[in-house]
Length: 315
Length: 105
Ligand SMILES: Cc1cc2nc3c(=O)[nH]c(=O)nc-3n(C[C@H](O)[C@H](O)[C@H](O)COP(=O)(O)OP(=O)(O)OC[C@H]3O[C@@H](n4cnc5c(N)ncnc54)[C@H](O)[C@@H]3O)c2cc1C
Image (tube, rainbow over the protein chains, first blue to last red):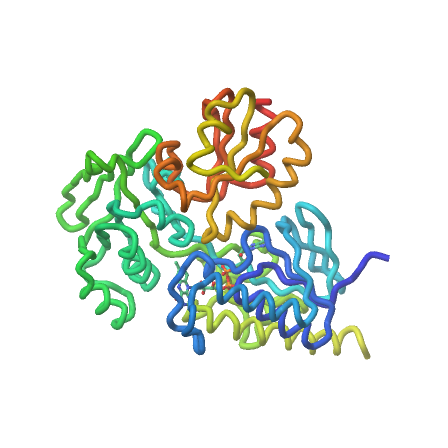
């Protein structure tokens, strides 16, 4: 007979890994499915300074590695697969992956979010050619080069500070005249001699043949355009983009309730509008999208899944 | 997969006859490490006709930039020393890499 898992978790980011840990520890048969890299968004940063207890070696990948180890120790199974379709009407839910089909009593959706693109000409073509959304992947290429960081939130400013360890100069380009990042992060950035700021400015176009060669900026107040060209000796420069996120929830369109932006709507117990389907982490409507809230969601979802199974399957 | 570095890249890739697939990766790049088993599986299937190599870019930064690789993961296909196609970042999936191999080999 085909295996029916107690809990199948979509996504191995902090929310999914925490849910996996709690579910497996509760002796539920648990499977975590991940389409890409283990750890989700947090594995793209080397700066995680605000997760309680995470001080020594506080990089995203090291934090994730410890979460995975803990998860597996309690017996959660992990597989690489992309879930393409879900059927949630029946008591037993079905998840159709690229590689396999899975059956489960409960689903925890922890699909997180992906970086929002600037949506300007040249951006797609030059991704991996100077345009990047991942500092841990690409910062190293820009050792002694110039780098622009687009955005003004926590991620943008923290990554800008991190990038000064590599680049000779980092310019933060923000569409407003003040940053949105936490005050302590701002202070650190203002004090850093390698960081400069360009205010009220957005990117209009990225240009280059094979590598980024120039970028066109637009001042949103004056409408003025300005093209920045790569230093002749360098030939190129970096553009790191942190302008927001998009929830990865298309899978559940017309199945689960979501807000206009596509974030899943849950109650305090991570219940969605479908019984037995829970949502946790960055993919749901919430006021703070961080590791600390993602792992909390995951824990709650797993415990609620356990209760649901006890009620519905074991009378 | 054969590991190449900045000293052996020339000989193993640019001077090689036939098709060579290069996996540009680094230890710090989590998506690269997630993709690597898929590339190894493709080597099992296509290893007879395509030579599979991997290059750790942290020790070959200039070389990578010269090959117009400035982001990871990047999987590039070379034929007789010329880069003919590549997939990078989100597009660097097993299915896309396989399609690229099938198209050219
Ligand atoms: C640059 C950057 C810096 C950050 N810095 C900090 C920080 O310092 N401190 C902090 O607390 N937070 C930080 N964050 C935020 C933090 O990373 C997120 O809040 C957290 O990762 C959310 O966890 P999650 O598990 O909900 O989602 P994610 O981390 O997004 O993980 C979701 C996972 O689900 C997978 N997935 C999605 N759909 C499917 C599918 N259909 N099938 C299979 N798998 C799927 C995805 O591939 C992904 O791996 C940062 C984020 C970024 C981008």
